[in-house]
Length: 501
Image (cartoon, rainbow, N blue to C red; front, side, top):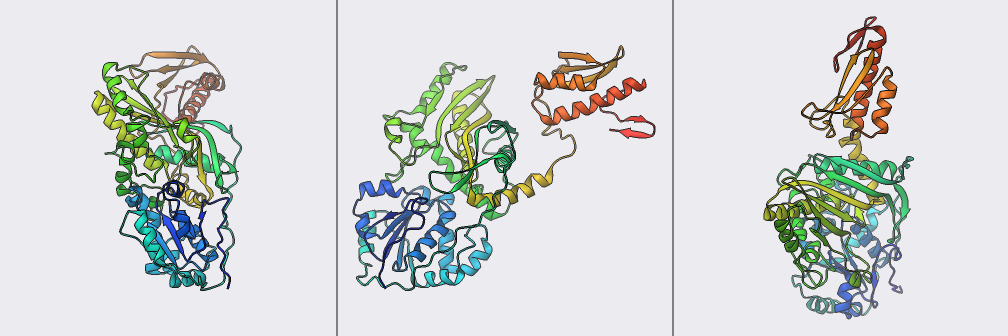
């Protein structure tokens, strides 16, 4: 049987092809392209070289092994600091569980993590004939030497190459929308994040990515988290499979935090946000500059840092997704604004938020502020097709099935003020008042519709629930006005035996 190296969808998944051999290299969170630049002999040793960033990558690796049955050894190299964090280990642990527990059990327990099109009988054969090795050494030269010792001259395939159908994804039809420019907010990270996921699933445009797979994308999503920090960060009781996939487990978040708060970086990693913020470019500590600037001038607009360097990143296949941060004070609170040119909302956004909150706490403490709000501008807010089903199921349980049909004082307080409604001089009087009761805007009319439209056209509220509530109250007031009944705001109106609340 003639052995030929094949790659599964090479235009979609970046797999480096080397000289024909029976050995493959799977890195975990180390960029193979960067590794190849410093160690060009890799392609002389390994037949194929790829990386494992997430659990989705396990199905890709299995497909490549099925296409290349002459490969009988896979070195799983975990040199990167990220590869030994909870997030970095998720894909590796799923892969190892296949070899230790078997495909049938793992597929049953992780039905949304592995491609359903993979045939259990074929994967069993792969597991029987392919050896997974995790080298103890971080030295890639030693790993190559160990791999060479396992080279086989015969390249005997243990089965015919097998390909499987492409994954079948539900498309989830897109609803019409304004397309560009979204503003969302939540008191907690989870509430704000769920709102972003919800909008992407309902209104995101389906389009290709540069990797070849599909995404749902919203352009220019600004989402604000008003009251959260790393100590109060919510950990909802969602399935472990979901929390692992979206990076929400506590140990994942704590380990990921260092990516934002330290400058450590391996040579095989193009960057970390911390390395760019604390030592880049030209070894500049941008965070120290921000702290000094805020200490010197509490209302400065120059507490800004960038992670993007055109001289480096325009030539790189994986430039930073987070491109800039800026701190602005509001009274004694320090707000943080972060811009992402590209934002994987499903698998990256929550760890990103946790890291940003940790950085915000550090800067606020060092410059003498309390932690304020965190606002994220996700210019391309997207979710990849392999995550749509999980997102749909999560929204069905955590958001769509839990819509509150009542006023909730924890989430429905209007930050722009309250409205006081009364009947005087045969008119409905509506006043927007602040917390002290001072009238900020007043309008009177006999028509509830005209008053409601006046407030809406002037965009006086921030919450859609407030518009609904006030419109109902104005309608009650108009009924009372025409029937010459008394009206008390937020109290039931009774006429002809009908109670209107």
